[in-house]
Amino acid sequence: MSEKLLEMLNDQMNFELQSAYEYKAMQIYADDEEFEGFAHWFGQQVREEIEHAEKMTKFLQEVGFKPVYKAMEAPNEEFEDLLDVTKKALDHEKEVTRRIHEIAKAAREAGDERVISFIQSFVDEQVEEEDTFGKLVTRLKRINGNYGGLYILDGQLAHRG
Image 1 (cartoon, rainbow, N blue to C red):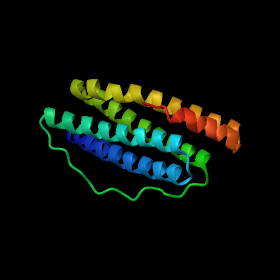
Image 2: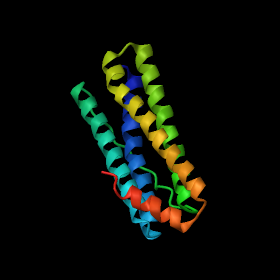
Image 3: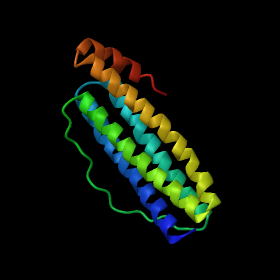
Image 4: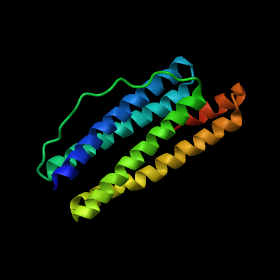
């Protein structure tokens, strides 16, 4: 594996953990606002991001490289409302997508079939993530702060398995 790809994968592994940190702050915000369904939903995101980092850790080890962990930044904890939280989550997922696509492009350029194969599941995952967050933003815009609509949506999000 090229040094460039190794560095990119290590950076992404760390960014996945940073993502978990960001979603944890969002979960706490939703919980503080007493939206248990949103809190549950963001908690599921936390777990997914940790799983992604673990997959990257395992992949690096399987192909003979040592994962390198870095210090994380404090997460954003300033949110106006649930729409703001969700817009920030969507923006974050778009950044994840950008990074994953850069890794995929670099792997193709390097002709590293191991990384091409590995990163494809993350490319596919990001399509789903952006779609899910985009739909959630749309629903929150339509609800327009109406508590009845917020609590219905909150109840729906509580059932995410």
